[in-house]
Image (tube, rainbow, N blue to C red):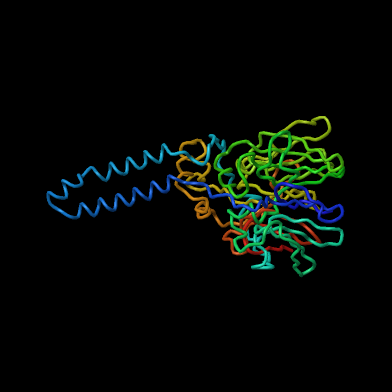
Length: 410
């Protein structure tokens, strides 16, 4: 059975008993978010340059045309106008109660991940998550909306989730090209709340499909806004393919992302990416219906969670959060919504990637929430932005969200 392929809005039966999810492909590109603040800033810079030119004219004419206080006043007016412009985000304050954990013991920096090998370079762009069929074929979806099958050392293209265009793989074209990344049923959503950012997926032994909706506000292409806002609009949902009904299992989650059922399926783990935490929700037993913190203060932002053959959970870390002289940027920014609003007004989404630390990392965690091992690529020479660690046939397939290759670790 095909499982754990992530996309966005309808469940498709791609092969007999194989469930596949498809990203939104509506035929119309959603317009990019308007940023009037940036236009205002450009106008102010032009005005300041013009003022500087005038000041160089010299003499009384210069003083008459542009007084000395003109430039500071122009800057002040510009920042005031930016302040009163609407922000694309409506953030909430969030305080990380502890600094990032020290990189000692099981978190000691190593080069284990550098033993991996890149494969299908230039062919797979952002192979984020994986699954395998009964014949050992591995399936993955990529950021350009394509579904692939890996059979031995051969890569086979299966289908395009939406339209196949040269622009596929860029954020603005996800609504047209699709993005294998989550689950979806229909446009009505569950319990009256439409889907926006469907993500993690697990199928139980009873054939119940558990999946997450990371946000009821932002789509995947705007996930950086979701992280900055630190809102709690995520959900854990369940779908019964027999009755074709869905229900909300848990709501109020912080960017609900990867999930993993326990070996006995008495609980499920859920990554809350934006606050670097994993929670546990009990599905059965004496604690049924109870939510608790499984692991807090992670050394990075968790993505997918996988149960390994050894009984440990492997957690991909999309972006590290390490201790340093200064607090990590989002830790420091967390308590100040007004700063978040201002930064979102003047900074393009693509600009945030400049600050990402290219340090590859995934963790192995036991059933008590303790980190027992970590795999590092400290300079990102092999990979970084780890999304998933999928074990098959003695190998670990290390996924990512946007890099143009797949890494295999033996």
